[in-house]
Image (cartoon, rainbow, N blue to C red):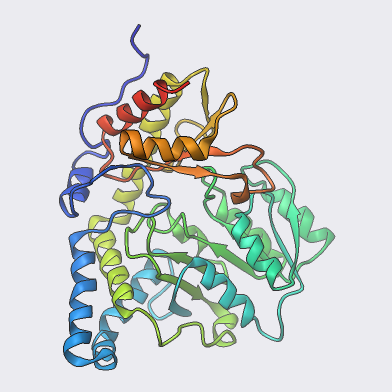
Length: 374
């Protein structure tokens, strides 16, 4: 009996997917793990290599000085993707999204915040950073897709020092009503810090424009180098949070991030968002139809993100499965353990996150691989 849903051959994102694939090295594996790390393009690799060569030829400090114009343009691209005006606020390059959060909290005006409020499904490693610094946390209870009224009620009962929001989770690809919740927080005059690591280069991050702090990373949907992140601070806070950008850093990685930003803008952020939504929707529909009875697709099938979450119906060692998919089938996914969202997850899930170059054949390969296993 044939499956009720099929996926077309070739890139699910059409011509944009073909362009994405053509502009980067050929894959050695079926890469369905862009939410962990995207595949960098030739332009990104060339930017990194060119700077490393310049460091060898001129010395690291002269090479870094020569790169400042390119890095300034990259900061403006970050501002534009957040919906900020040119030169608004402060944009700094850091080592990672986690580093960004830690650096902002350590430099919080006056002293470390005492109390932080977050959604129930907050990213576990973010909570670990906060708690390591001795900051108390309170979760806003409610459904997985945020309820702005629940935030309003929580803030009316007890005003925290700040609210932390993760725009798109690591454990499920639900697009949250970020702009609405940020508006609620601002009405309550509570500072808002937004983790955009999974959203930047993936969703419309102008929904975070009214947040006080937004931070993210290079390596995921923009497919830049690992070890590079950014933090953007606006309003009064921008003048009071200083020293975020460390001079002693891998400038080559920052220039790779700059190249990835330039490519993203050239492709068209709206077109990329639409392409990624198409990839996610097509993947969910196919997996839901083909794996019914053994796996559940967690998100609504047409959720406009490319993160697809599979939850096993029965006992499955998801970490071992993920390793076996790589070793036996050459398919890269993620085992999303409960530590990613300890307030929501009770069992691990298999995360599937293709990019613009994901093809129908890639999805069918995953379907076949999962069907062959008990």
